[in-house]
Amino acid sequence: MNQWDIVSWQPPGWPEPHPAVIVSHPGRAANKPDVEVILCSTKRAGWKAEAHEVILDEADGLDWPTLCKCDLIYAVSRKALGAKRGHVSDQRKGPLARTLLAAHGWAAWM
Image (tube, rainbow, N blue to C red; front, side):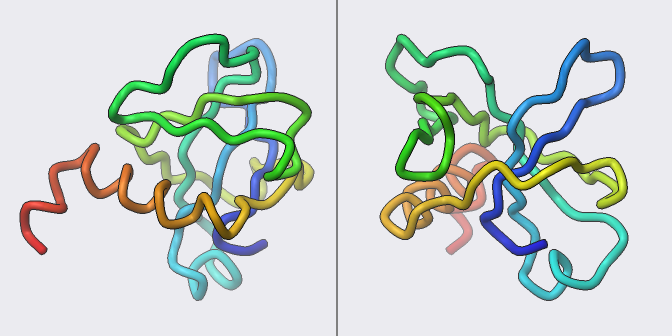
């Protein structure tokens, strides 16, 4: 399991799994029992992403454009994560990281 991998995760109380992007530090992603993820929508993203969202798609290994919400980070047991669905493409890693920072107001402290 690696940072930027896209995996399946079914949040508690949700009817089905959704794509989730692992955003943990590489050391945590590879070795710790819990990792941090952001959740994505499996519905086709037919709208423009809001300031706290990014769209991933076929270039990232997904079947269609998928909206990922960067304003909420979940801590999840790696045992709860399902199969790998893709990996965030190199050209989207920077924008996704910047969106995570901005969505939490952290960029102001840099």
